[in-house]
Length: 495
Image (cartoon, rainbow, N blue to C red; front, side, top):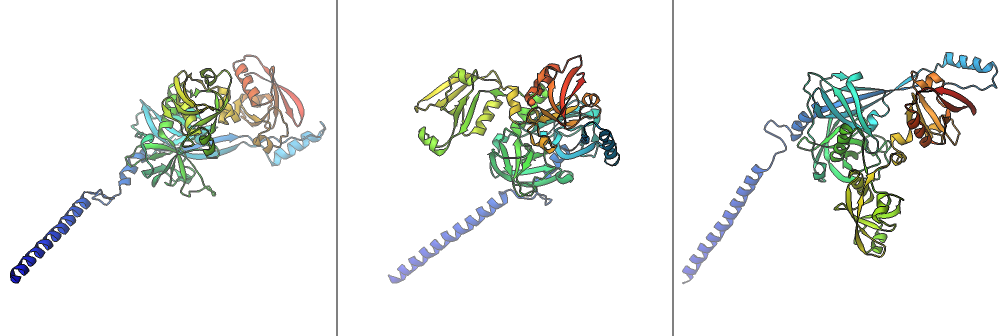
């Protein structure tokens, strides 16, 4: 009996060991099968997946260099109208002649559209801003400049610009544009550009974050919704493409945050969906038309959110409602919290401003708000066109400087005016004069303070802009009053 029990035990043990061995073998087989099916970081030739991306995108990337002519300021000598004025002027001009200087800058861009013999290039506004000459160098080292390069349009509020080049008989590659709304944190990110002048450099990283805003970036855009990446972006990369692993452009490299000015792992790109929206308007209508609601939005703090009965500090608080605006007509009140705009959830001020700006003027939108009484209501507003004078106040290129008649002016109280030693509190200061322009012919000089143009008293750059608008097509000479060394002078210019 005991012998049979032992025999049965041995059989059971062998059976159990067989099951365990089979399970182990099966697991190893499945693991090997899974490993063989997993994508490799290299292909059969030992190349990384970035090789193909680089081969596709690099030929579409261009090198953009610009030149800007800056006339040196004339020396002013005031000896009460004595012969010493002319003597010292001639003396200093002999040893320190006021030759015009060339200011050069370097950036990147990429071809994103073709129309016959013309190709459209996307870049940053700050790359070509105030340029007197633009040189585009293609991937085959061909340089295009002069009349074959045209600035289609610029938008300082998003830092996007479009230029057009003529290349008859050429068949230039065009970059594929992706969908920046579909990117995820952790996705591959490949940046291409010309950092420090090193032609078509490729760097690799990941998407570090989305929707970055509130960045204090010199020459940076007002509307901010940056893609953050750790792909190396350095000076000269501006305007170049940020692409995904498929070789599709998902952003326009724009800026870095660094204490030294060099790469530290934090770079920013403008989402291609926003850039594409701006570029389409610049190409099709020649300007940007933004929606306008007419409120001053304020961020929600956790304490304010609790006061309104909100679980999270999401939405924007209406701090002010401008008169005679779509907001006032729709019934928005100070103290309302906007939680939904045109069917989209409102999370913060920056995203809300973009929502409004990207909605075409004249569009009827539904706005869901929570009042100070805690009640929720839905309002309807018809957006207006964003006022041009408000665009100027946002600090864009058109707002801080105005060019006309071959001269560029800034507000008398600006930093640029102070650098010239100007202490005037009113008027606009001439900071640049084109040697071949009408202002130069009339005797206007760098450092002059413009106080009157025709019938317009000039107290700030807004007044100067109005005068420009009125007199731009004027066929007769207009009188311009300037202060030079505190002494008034009257000059005549024919627009």
